[in-house]
Length: 402
Image (cartoon, rainbow, N blue to C red; front, side, top):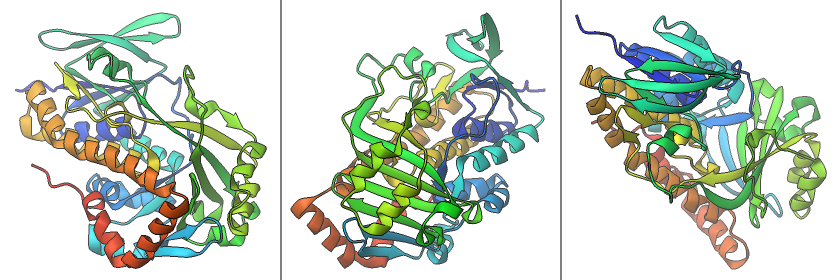
């Protein structure tokens, strides 16, 4: 009888939770190691493009996610200074038919709840909170993982380790990608807010995703939880850096820090920005794509492998794709750990790296101004919905498994 493989996953975010489900369903035992003392519902809204929703459907989780999510009828792209519409994509009508799954927006905490409940339903998955992974040692038959629990050092043994521990990944640092492997500061920051539906301008409650393009800034908003909340993300050029910050989500900003940046925008945009009472400032980093995500019995996943800028809203989606590819690799390779991790790496590095680069380029396009901004607006209008959606086919269609 073949021994059941044991996987350890550092990090119980969206990617780590999805990977635990995928590996358990591939027949493995999984231990999730989360540094927080408990998994708290936190964050704001996120977009789940069809490539992510297709994976969630395969996992049997999409219907549950849809219970919490909103399916935007439109993606409306608008010019910041006067609100003029540059393009509109009929997402609800086109996504399923064109890309094979819906396009949803959901509160991060609601998606997290679905994944946590799914993990709890898998007998092979155990979650150990309050364990901060500090390092690991690889032996001939497994990995010895060191973690800190308060003032104590804890040892966890597994057949292999997945680092899903985010931008500042300890696992990535330990697999030796080199001194040049540092996060790349984008020169921009995102300010995130949740506006109560009762306080939001009426236009912001329409079941739409709105994208406003302005000078060195853009604004995204959409309703959540059936209009109970409106998710607002304002991204602008910013000289500030978060070097040394332990938790990028903990950086509070005052409304007075944000509103002046949108003083010359259309009245609707100003009204929505002004309705937000609390903002969180999040400096934007990515990393140059690499072709190696793994070492002996160790591999990376999600932001630990491919942190990306949010201009295609693909961070969570690519982590979910990673999870599916990891599960598929172990389904096919059985108990050959390194062969499975190699197959996973080969399936994902080119795809995720392309999204990292495309997201950087998209940010430059969004923040154009002057003659370049005028030309961008003209091109968007000329392309129309059909050709714009065609340009998204490579991203929103799930990659073919090899």
